[in-house]
Length: 251
Image (cartoon, rainbow, N blue to C red; front, side):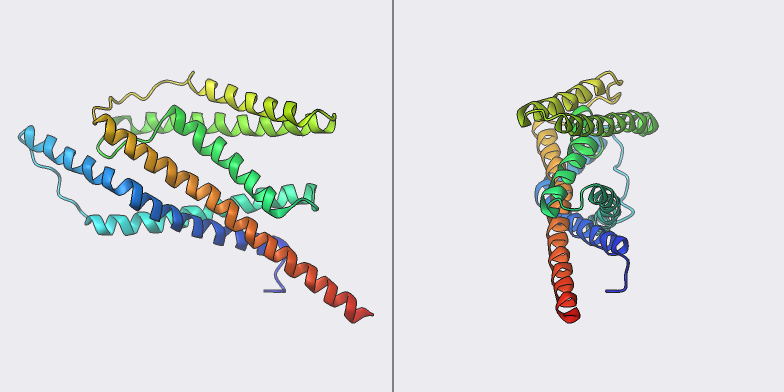
């Protein structure tokens, strides 16, 4: 492990942190989202029987689906962790002296706001059985548009914050300017077309499902930031001790 390059060790920390965050998100989804999913499935079955038809038989059991979703969440978290580690490496190269914990949490917050919260606020998660399969491509396209706008807004906010910092602007001004840019980005997503599918599910079901979905998303990002930050602090302490040992040996 000691012979690995710093970048490979960083990527390894990112993948591990992301996988663990995905596992935590799976637990949150099960606790908060599973009741809503079961209720949505029951409503879909009831609607099918009311129309005189039959609900399509499940190819996989619910337990198998839950396991598959858990595996997918862990793998997705690991992939996000790799990208997170690359962005962290770029920022570390620009400012090696920055606190790893603080930087990791800031990056996690930026990722959550730009890549998850802004698109979610424009196109909230829908319970199962809501949505026409014929509109999947269109819905994917408009969500991608919101995702790109969110990423651009957070990037622009960071760039503006850094330029104001270089000019010696007060912290309050820098923070308000960054928030304003993010809000403009959120407003821009509402220029995109709306969701074409009507949502006829009960309001309570929709609300509980969306709360669970957002909680799981937040768990991925902030779990990733916290775990990666802790691993980075440990790595920095280990490197510091190793350098001290080498210095003592040289003496």
